[in-house]
Image (cartoon, rainbow, N blue to C red; front, side):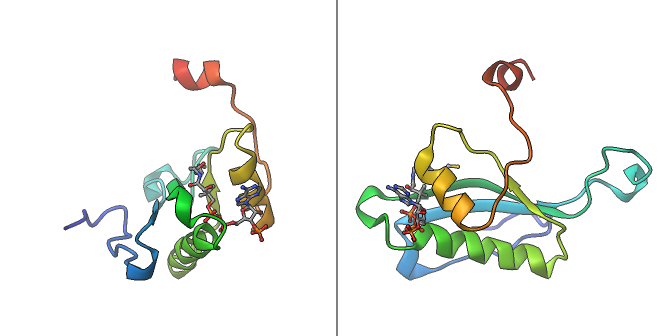
Length: 115
Ligand SMILES: CC(C)(COP(=O)(O)OP(=O)(O)OC[C@H]1O[C@@H](n2cnc3c(N)ncnc32)[C@H](O)[C@@H]1OP(=O)(O)O)[C@@H](O)C(=O)NCCC(=O)NCCS
C-alpha cells in the first residue's frame, strides 16, 4: 500500500504480532504562513482511530500501538498528541488517562454535528 507523503508520516507501523489491532494517526502542522494567527497549530500528532479485536483486549496492545505513534510524533518534534474520545467510553478514557493524557476540552455532540 502506498501512502501520501503529506502529512509526513509515510511509514505504516507494521507489527505482524499486533495484527488484531489497528492504530491510525498522523503528524501535522498548519502551514508556516499561518504562524501569526492565534489559533496556529504547530507540529502535533493525532490519534485518528484505535481498535483492538475483542479477543485480544487487555493484553497491552492498545498501549503498545499508542506509544509507537507517540514515538513517531517525537521524531517529528511534535508538541503534543491529541485525540477525541467519548466521555462514556470508560475503557478508552481509562487507557488514555493511564498513559498520562489530560482533558483539554469538552465538545458537545450538537457542536460536532453542526460543524
Ligand atoms: C479501548 C481499546 C482500544 C483498549 O484496547 P486494549 O488493547 O484492550 O487496551 P490495553 O490492554 O492496552 O489496556 C490499557 C489500559 O486501558 C484500560 N482498559 C483496557 N480495557 C479495560 C476495561 N475493559 N475496563 C477498564 N479499563 C480498561 C486499563 O487502564 C488498561 O491498563 P491496565 O491493563 O494496566 O489496567 C479496546 O477496548 C477497543 O478496541 N475498544 C473499542 C474501540 C475504542 O473504543 N477505541 C478507542 C476510541 S477513542
